[in-house]
Image (cartoon, rainbow, N blue to C red):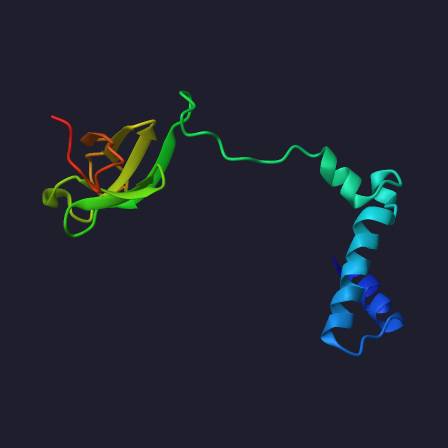
Length: 146
């Protein structure tokens, strides 16, 4: 990174700007040259843009993929609830005031959510099932199944 800053500083010294518009134009040209024209020794004389195009890009996994489970760590609030974003909506899952401030793991698979206790090293109820939900994204508050 230090090498990059040195190169950029030399370029800016060689191309002085008198306004912010000129500076932006100079920086844009430098970025284009640096990434799309200049060959890089470590990349086999290829440009950084070429190397970047070869790398597979990360993308969100569709939520309807039957093999995907979301895992969320949380603490039950003072009202016995947690919040969960599902299908673009913020849902409130009612677990119960008896479990206030309990650290939990929320496992979400498609429209099903399972709440279990988290191993904090303090209690012996590790992995206790607290609640199961069938999530309904049309309602803000979600009641436990059963």
